[in-house]
Image 1 (cartoon, rainbow, N blue to C red):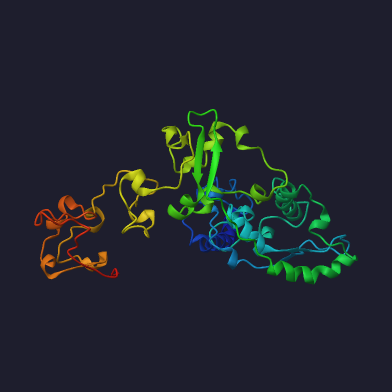
Image 2: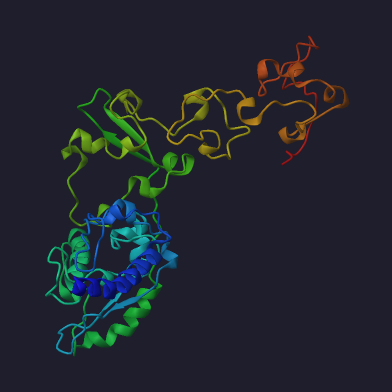
Amino acid sequence: MKTKLLIFLFALPLFVFSQNKVEKLHQTQALNCKTCHSCDIPTKENPCIKPCPRERLITIEQTPSDAPSILTIDKMKKTSDIYAPVVFSHRLHAEMADMGGGCRMCHHYNPPGEVVGCADCHELTRKRTDLSKPDLKGAYHQQCMNCHRQWSGKVECESCHAQNGSAKKTESKPKTDLAAKQVHQKVNPPELVKYDTPKANGKIVSFNHTDHVSTFSIDCEKCHSNESCNKCHAKYKPASLANRSVADKHVICANCHNTKANCSDCHKNSVVGSFNHKTRTGFDIAKNHAKLTCNRCHVEKGKFAGLKADCSICHGTWTKENFKHLITGLQLDETHADFECTDCHQDKNYANPTCKNCHEDKTYPKDKPGKLVKKSK
């Protein structure tokens, strides 16, 4: 009994130190121990770690401009190696990844905080303790070769490595300089993509890319998540949309649209042009709201229907005291400046005022109750 007590007293400071270290490491993270550990008291000998919850832990906020331009991958370098270390154009790859899944395409197990390097998780030695996780060399090759194989169909060692003792090795510095200057060419996305859907009631689906990106301000990653470069650049193209199941065809669109109902919203018998707010909703935003983003009015995410064209919903109640008419580009004359708003704007119709309350022979916009001026901000 005394022996067990002495062991406990000796181990207690180490356990407290370990606990303090863990708490310090996690104090900035809103995590519950059960998120990662399956037991109540994890220890070094038995951490009882669950498979990493990727979606909750991958939080990388860095942009390609924050990334190092060039990395030399030489952690596994040996004097007997046939090949020289790899000069990796990190920023260029980060720019390409930014159009898909972002940094997480490579840094696929990254808890909150700084970006975790590959060697932080993958062991240098091939005789690793966790056989379910590739060693560092295997991780590098698996990560790189999967993309390059789909892209070009070729994964020769020389495509990334210079041979030791060969003339290629002397090119390492110029290659470094070149890689540092490389940037991904500007992407010119299509304005409109037309999908033929002969088996549906509507034979054509018109996807207006410009509307989704510019008008609705949807981030590229919303649709192009976890996509590699081969989606656009692959020499060997993947199976076409026609070979996919109905569920697969709708999976991305279903993020925003109810694809299980109202098929006719997307499936038409002719190509549909870009989104026109006046035509589609009856409310003309071109005059006073054209520069606003959609979420200024449609504040509930993913919901665009149900708003009324009543200005007071967003602007409150206007009176001649609290509304500066100059903002419309029309300076009221002395007579009309004393009128109440409703004298000209009946039924809160601020777009088309009426003159009939006072004038039988005047109409707007032919006759104006003042003079046009530069719009006031």
